Amino acid sequence: MKLRPILGLLLCLTAPSMASAQCMLCGKEGASPATASRKAETPLRVEVETQLDMGRIAVGATGGEVEIDPLTGVRRLRGGVVDLGGFALTGVVTVSGEPGAEVRVFLPPTVDLESGDGRTARVVGLSTDLSAAPRLGADGRLQFRFGGRLQVAALGDGDYRGRIPVTVEYQ
Image (cartoon, rainbow, N blue to C red):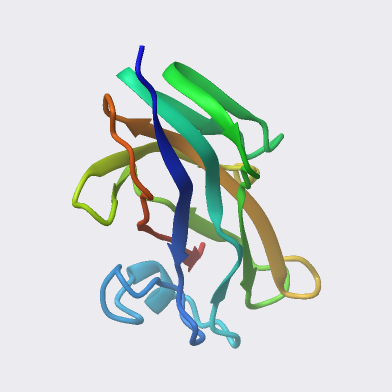
C-alpha cells in the first residue's frame, strides 16, 4: 500500500469579530428570528480560541477518516490512514453575552475543505461538548469544545483548509 502524506490538516472557524449572534457566512446580522424576538441588553459575541486541527496523517489507496472527539480530545484513525504525529486539537469557542441567558449553538452538518492543488476533503459529524440547554455563566461567558470527522479520499494528499460557520442565538 502506497501512502501519501497530508500535512497540517487545519480547520479554521469563522466567527464574528463584532458583537453579533451570527457568523459572517450565515446571513445578515440580526436576521435571526430568535435574536430579533429577544430584547437582550448584551449582544452575543463569538470568539475562536483554538482552531480545530486534525494533525498529520498519510493516506493510502483506500482513503480513510480522522476523528477528533470533543469531549476527550482523542484522535481516532479509520481506514487507510496512518498517524504521522503532530498535535490534534479540538476547536474551542467562547461565547459572551447576557449573564445567565440560554443560547443555541448551530454547526453545519458538513464542511468541504480544499487543498492548494484543488483537491477536496469533507468534515462531517461536527459535535460539541455542550449540554442540551447551554447557558452563559454569571460572568456572561460560555466556552465549548467541538470536534468532527475528516473524510479523505484515496491518495488525497494535501494541506486541507476550510471555514466552519458557527451560529449562536439567544434561546
